[in-house]
Image 1 (tube, rainbow over the protein chains, first blue to last red):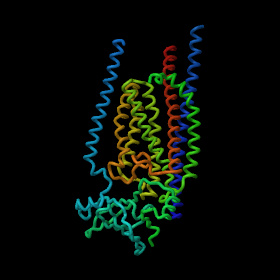
Image 2 (tube, each protein chain N blue to C red):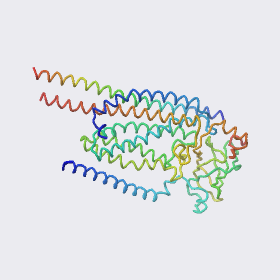
Image 3 (spheres, helix red, strand yellow):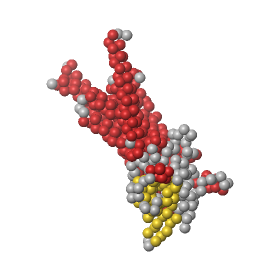
Image 4 (tube, rainbow over the protein chains, first blue to last red):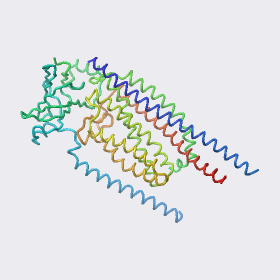
Length: 57
Length: 163
Length: 241
């Protein structure tokens, strides 16, 4: 009994590893995309502000 | 409400009905297809069905049921492990012979799915044996204490116990 | 309904909720893993290997939950023409696909030692694989069709048609004989698991769920920001040209 249970450790470990990879991967990808979009929007808004300032003056 | 608003509301309602009816029709169609395919979707046949259908020897199929208690026997002849056991569904039984390693969860009284064919003498010669376990999860300690009090009914002679 | 439709309002509300859902996700994972790996006892037949269910079951549950979210959001988008609903559906798809893949993979890792095979074409496993392809198809529709309105329409139809498959997944183990065992949690006569094992499973499902909600909010925010970026770019382009 204990023998095959140790042999099965590889399956348990792989499952938890796969879970960690998927969760961390998803979280990082989503977080990074959000950050990039926020930064892109900020620079764009700055450009728009500068453009409209130029047009006013 | 303005005329325009009313029209938009009516359109919304129409879309909703369209959606609901198409889903109902789709559901019905899928149900019909699935019931027509019933025979190929099922994974295995139980011993009663095999007795009723009269499957020819040599025809490949999957057999499923419980491993009958006290039916398991393993012999090693010439380095090859030969397993013999009976599969039951409580009504009919089928004798099975299988050469090779059995999965961890193979136990008497537990579910099993075997692929193979009947030979000429009414014995199912399996090429692959898979264990099917049930939906119950229970701590070891609970079973041990139940056994101690004699309240655990299921005979559990596992393959580890058989010499 | 229309309160949440406003993207600006969604941004404000989600920013308010996010710290809480993030914290709760981390907390649930910490407690859930402690239960799953330490407190929950060994199973009487499967020993420690059964601990795979603490990843497998939540992943499979989120795979179906995700599809449910897409289908409901698609229906709202289809009937009420809600842009935010379409965005929510679109943001969910990659997560759902990832959880389906995880459920299939961990199921395989369970099947090999327990059943004796990595894969079998039984009704449960096959319908789960179909779910994965449905997710891929749904994502492909969004990526190949340029026109936003048309993409949303076709994607929503794909999503709602595929909903039939989710029902098949749930009942596959009851309608046909399969190698996969019947339901443990969602059954008429109550769960066939108890004590710390049940607690671990519920905690892990809760953790996965909170994780899903947190990421969904990030992803919808991302899609809203991208729409704003696109319209600003057009504005700048138009101003200069």
